[in-house]
Image 1: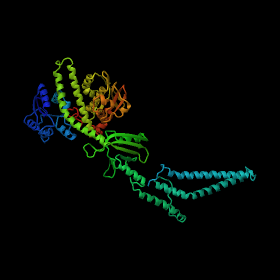
Image 2 (image 1 turned 135 degrees about the vertical axis):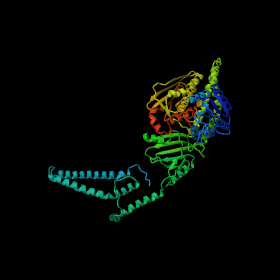
Image 3 (image 1 turned 30 degrees about the vertical axis):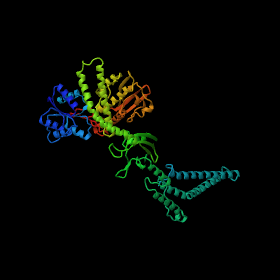
Image 4 (image 1 turned 90 degrees about the vertical axis):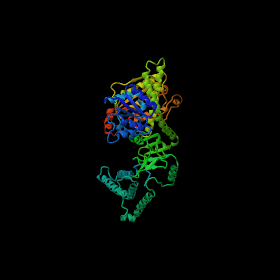
Length: 126
Length: 513
C-alpha cells in the first residue's frame, strides 16, 4: 500500500508546522488539525493512510480518539496506520493500552522530522 | 526461659566431670595398690616373684576399684540428676535421663523437694517473661523506653531474618499473620536480603551502609527517608542489627525538587522537539550555504540540543526509577550496534569539545542482553562525563572485551581523575564532587541512573580512578546466551520479555516506562 495522505493531530503550533513542512517536502498530502474533536471528525470523514496522533490534546485526548476509532468491536479505520507521537510520560497501563491499537508509539523529542519521514516510509514497506 | 551461657557447654559438663573423676579414682587405686605391693616387697613379707603378692595386689585393685566407683556413682547421683534437670530447662539437648522426683527414696531423702524447687523457679521465671520483646529487669525497660524515645530506628533480626525487636521509630508493620515486616524500599538489587545472602555465605562479621532509603513509595503519606547501617554477626542470637537514621528532612527537599524537575522536564521536551527537529531539517537545507566557522557553530547547536535531550531523559528516568517504574526490555543485541545509535552524536560532542574519541570493539564479541535505548543512554552518560572531566585535546576511548559470562565495556579518559574518597560516593543521587561543583555543569544524576539501568540488566558498573591521571568506567553486561533461558521463561525480575518485534516500530523509551 502506498502512503499518500497523512492526518496530523497536534496542538503545538511549532511542532505541527514542522511536521507538515517536512511531509509536504517529502511529497505527502498533509491535513493538520489542532484539537481532539476536530481530529476525530477528520479521521471519520476521510480515509487517511497515516494518522499522527498526539496524546495531550485540547477538547479530546489522543487516548480517547484512538479508543473511539479502534476501541469498539469494529475497527473504523482498518486501512490507516496510527502513529502515536507524544512527549508525555504515560503510565504503563495507558501506554500498553494505546500500543495495542496503534502501529507505532514514539517520543517526539527523540524523533526528528527526517526520522519520522523514514519511519512512515518503513510502514509503507510492511 | 533464657539462660545466658556460652553455647553448648551445660550439657557437656556432666560427661566430662564424671569421666575425670573416674580416671582420678582409677589412678589413685593403682597408685595405692602399687604402694602396698612395694611395702610388702620391701618388708620382705613376700617376694616379687610370688603368686601371692600379685594375687593380693590384683584382688585389692578389683575390690577397691569396684567399691570406689560404686560410691562415686551413688554420691554424685543427686548432682547428675540436678544437671539433667538444668540442662533440660536450659533447652539444650542431653543424653542424661531426667530423674523421677516422685520415687520413695527421693521423697524420703528430701531430694524431691530440691527438684521441685528448681522446676518451680523455672516456671515462675518463664511466666514473668512473656514471649517476644517485653523485658524483665528495670535496666532493660529503661533501655527500651530510651530507644522508643529516639527518632532513630533500631531493628534486630535473628538468624531466620525474623524481626525480634524494633523500637517505635523503626519502619516496621505487622502483617495479617502476625509477622513483623520491615518497610524499606531498597534500590534495585542492592537490598538487605541480597546483602544478608552474601553475608551468610562469606562473612562472620560484616557491616554495610545504605543511604536515602525510603519506607514508602512516592505520593504516599508520611514518607520517610533513612540512612541504614547494618551489622551482621554470624551465630549471635541477634544476628543482624539495623540502625536507621531518619534523614527525611534533608532528603525530602531533593525529592520534591526531583518531582518538580520531572514535571518540568515534560514541558521542556516540547521546545526541544522543535529545536532538534529544525536543526535536523536545516542541516540538510543549509549544506553549502554556511561559511567559515558557521558549520562549526551549527554543530555546536546540534550537540547542545542533543545533550539537553539526554539530560532530560536522565531526569525522567531517575524519577521513574525512584518510583519503581523503570522497566527494562532485554533483547539480544550487539554492543557495536547499540553504540551505532549514539555514535554520530558522540562524535559530534567529542569534536565540538576538541577531544579525541576512539572506539574499538573486537568483531567477535558475543551478543549481550540489553535494552538498546537504556544502554545507549548509559554509554552516552559515561562518554559525556569522560569529555567533561578531561582536558582540552585529551583522549576518550571506548573499548569492550568478553569477561566470563559478561561483556565489559570501558570508557577511559586521561582527564582530572578523582581521589578514592570520592569514588565510593560517585553513584549516589545528586552527588557531585567538590571540584566538579565549581567547574563543570551537571545534574549529579547521570551516574546514579546509569548504575540503576546497568543493575536492572543484571550487570555491574565500576570505576578505577587516579587523581590527576584519569578514570576508567566499566560496565559489565550479561552475555545473552547466559540469560536467554531466564528471559524466555519470563521470571527475570525486570520482566525481561523477549520482544518479538510484532510490527512495532521501536524508538527510545517505547518499552520503558
